[in-house]
Length: 88
Image (cartoon, rainbow, N blue to C red; front, side, top):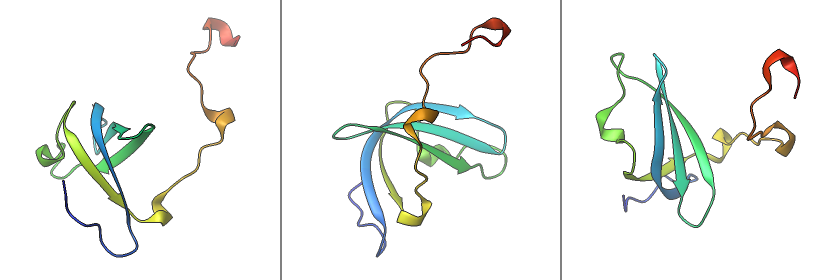
């Protein structure tokens, strides 16, 4: 976890909070050291999650190109589910 990221890449340390297998992809929710949370989507190899990526509670270092970041408008975030019948 102490590896230096490739030139021009960013690195964040965190801990896997949740992992959801989605067929050809696995979605990881990572609690970042210092606060915040990132959702990471990884393509599965051979139809299964890569065991080296770890499971819940495992410390990880995320490295990525700044071009891979996708901003999310605060209006898109919701912690509540819509009520039945479409009312919110």
